[in-house]
Image 1 (tube, rainbow, N blue to C red):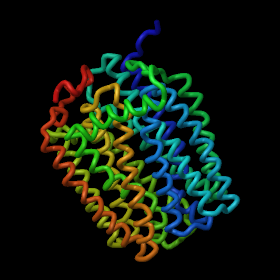
Image 2 (tube, helix red, strand yellow):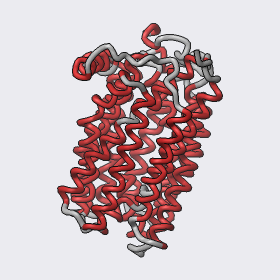
Image 3 (cartoon, rainbow, N blue to C red):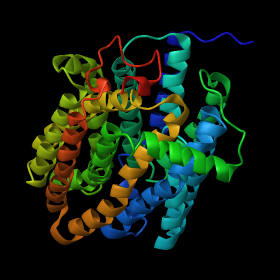
Image 4 (cartoon, rainbow, N blue to C red):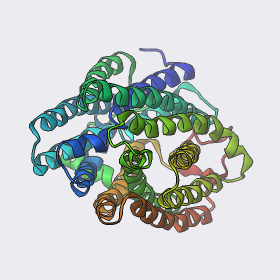
Length: 427
C-alpha cells in the first residue's frame, strides 16, 4: 500500500499543476483578441467566438465534473491537457487558413470542453488530498500561494507571448502553448495521484451523471449560502472574462499604436503581478474581517468601481493603475471565495459542485460577451467597460444574501476550516 503524501508534497504538486496550466494559458492571454481580429473577425465575432467557448463550458461542465467524481481527478486533468493541446493547435491552423466564423465557433466549443476537465477537478483533488494528509492549516493560505504561483507564471507567459508575437507573428505563442500542455500531461502523469478520494465507478456514465447531478444540486443550489454565492457568478465571471480580453485592444487604443503587441501583453503582465500581490495579501486581509463574505464584498465593490473608472477613458497610465487595482482585489477575493465555497461542499460531490459554480459563471459569460462586444462596436471599448461595471454590480445583493445565511464557514478561522471533517456537519 502506497504511503500517504505529506501536506507539503500535496501542496507542491498542486503548485506545479497551477504553474503549468497558467504558463500554458498565459502565452496567448495578452494577444488573443488581437489574434482573432487579425484572422479577419470583427469585434462582435471575436467576442462571440469567446462566447462559444463558454457555450462549450456550459454544455460539458457537468459531464466532465462527473468524470472527475467517477473516473478520478487525475484522469480528468490528463484529458483536459490533451484536449487543450489539440484545440490550441486547431486555433493556430484556422488563423493560417483565415477560417470562417463557424470554424472558430466550433473549435471554441471544444476549447471549452478542454477547460471543463480542469474546473473543479484540481481544487477537489487538492482539498481531499490535504484532508487525507492531515493538513490543519488555512485554505486561504494555500489558495493564496497558488495565486502567487499563477501570477508569476502569468507574468512570464503574457510578457513572453506579447514579445514573441511582435518578433515573429501572432500564431507562435499558440504553438508554444500547445507544447507546454503536452509537457504537463507527462508531469501530471508522474506526480498526480488521487489521494483521500475513491472514484465511484459502480454506475454507467448516464446513471452516474444523473446521480452526481442530483447530489450537486442538493449541495449546491439546494444549500442557501452556496446557492446565493453561486448566483453571483454570472454577473462577475462573464464580465471579468470580457473585460480581460477587451483591455488588450483598449490599452493599444489609449497608447496610440495598434501594432504594439508587447503593450497588449502589458495588461496581462500587470494583472499577473497584481495576482501575486493579491495572493500574498489574501490571508492577511481575511484576518482583518470576522467573515469571509466581508472580503468578497470588498473585492466585488472594488471591481465595479474599477470597471467604471476604466470606462471613463482615462490616460494610458491611469488605466494601468486601475488594471493593477482590479487585479489585486480579484486575487484577494479568489482564495477567500474558494475556501468559503469548499468548506460548504462534501467531498463526494466537490468536483461537480465546483464545476456547477463554474457553469453558472459561464452562462453569464455566454450572454454578456456578445452584448458587450457589440456595445464596443457601437460605442467603443470605454462604453462597453462602463456597461460591464453596471452588470457586475448586480452580484452584490447575492453576496449579501449568502452572508445573511450565517453559515459557520463564513466565520471559519485558519484552524477550523472544515478539512478535518465533512463540511455539511456544521450546517
